[in-house]
Amino acid sequence: MDPALKLQIAHDTATALVARVRDEGTVDIVQRLLEYTREHGVGEIAELWASAPAHSLPGALWRLYVVHASIVNDPDTAAHAYQRGVNDLNTIDEVVAGARQPTGPEDIRDLADEILRGAFVGELSVALERAAAYCRIEGHGVTTLVAGTEIGTSALLERAVTLADFALDLHACSVLARSNQLN
Image 1: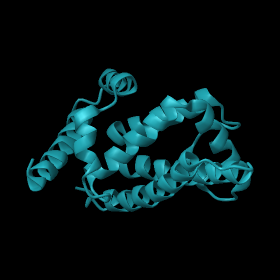
Image 2: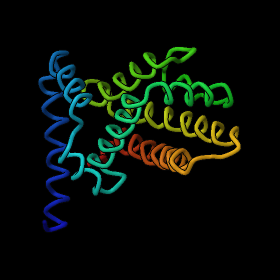
Image 3: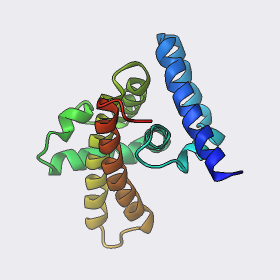
C-alpha cells in the first residue's frame, strides 16, 4: 500500500472512531468498545496506527491501545511493577495516573479501562496525560524489578524502554490535544 494512503487511512480511522464515540458517547458504546478491544484487540486498524507519527491522533491511540493490552494481558506483572514504581518515586504521577493504592491486578485493569474510556468520553488530553504518568511509573517499576534480579531479561528491559518512550510521546500528545493540534 502506498505509504501516504496508509497514513491518510490511519488518520481517517482514528478521527472517525474518536468522533463516533464522542458524538454517540453513551456508556453502552464505550463499554462495547472496551469489551471488543479486550477480547479482539484492534487488529488491522492498530497496524495502520502503529506506523503513524508518534505525535498524532492515530499514534496516540495506538500507544493507548498497546498500554491497555499490556495491562489486560498481564495484570499481575503490571500491578506489581506499578506498585514498585509508586513506592520508589516521589512525583505527582501517582495522583495523575489515578490507580487505587495499594494497586492490585483488578485495580490496574480498572485504571487501563478508565484511561481508554477517558480518551473517548472524557477530555482526551487528560487521558493522554494519565497514560503518560502510568507509563513513567510502570517503566520505573519495571526497571527496579530488573535491577533487583541477578539476571535481567531483555523483554523486561525492552518493556521499560518502551514505557519511557511512550510516556514522552503521550505527554507530547496531551499538550497537542490541549491546544486542539492533535491530528
